[in-house]
Length: 223
Image (cartoon, rainbow, N blue to C red; front, side, top):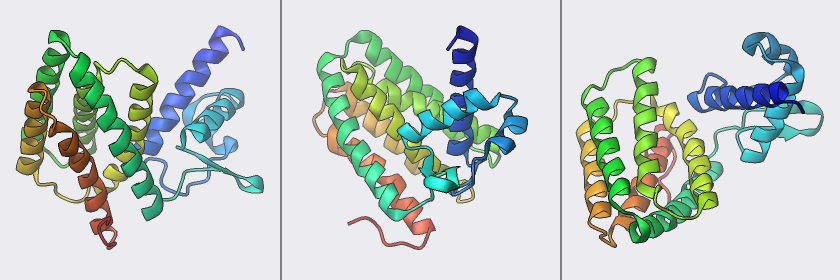
């Protein structure tokens, strides 16, 4: 693969992942090359490579003669990625609190401030939601940025994006913005203080998304 082909594949992968997470490509949507090529402007080869990569990441499923599609939204999958994220992100945070220095602390403070600003501005439009999600992602990345294990941080990031797809399903539900802001501030304070209770606090914070999505779908909360 030459450089231009590799670049096209990277761009196609990022674009499809973004569309799946945002819900522009909804759950169970078929992902046919004849539809994707004109929609995104990439060639068939980079799109095929992108679909294979996303299948390996769990953002796309492949079924025999049916081909590629967006994964369905299910209770089992939501709880799987939530519990996996609770486990690995808490461990990454534990390591970050052991290793983190001034630069790590500064980024947590900065990312929290930017997230709070967007939370205070909350508006009911998709453009604002995209901005908020970017700030929210930055905050969670900042918490574990000092974790010395790059692969662990990468896995955390992948699981974060998986749970974001479910969180975006709730865009029609008005969140409790004051509660959300308070939760982020309390979590950041515990982390900066190297307080061991930051770990269960993070796990509870992550679990809140699953509880809210299940409630929206009329399902019982996780046990």
